Amino acid sequence: MTATPDGLPRCGTGDPIMTMRTRRYFTCINGHSGVETTSENDQPYSQHWESVRIEGLIDAGKDPRGYAHYVCVECQAPMLEKA
Image (tube, rainbow, N blue to C red):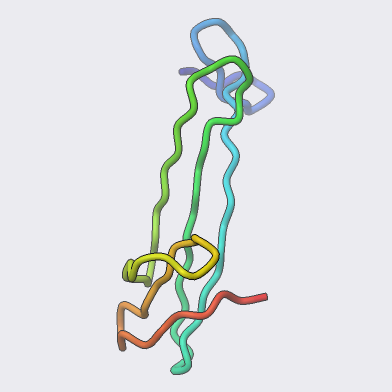
């Protein structure tokens, strides 16, 4: 992978690498905050991959909608997603 003057990363064929990032922000009742960053391959005709990175959060299973549920890394209080 190389970068070009336009700043877009390129793969060996010269095509841009299309990575979509989604961030979800959370806070607990004690004011601590955390973030979930999901990166996924958004390039057509290529193998799908996904990576999730969390900061300030501890994984606590899934919520009723199937999304990841978290507790605070500092006080273990439930984390609520910011609107």
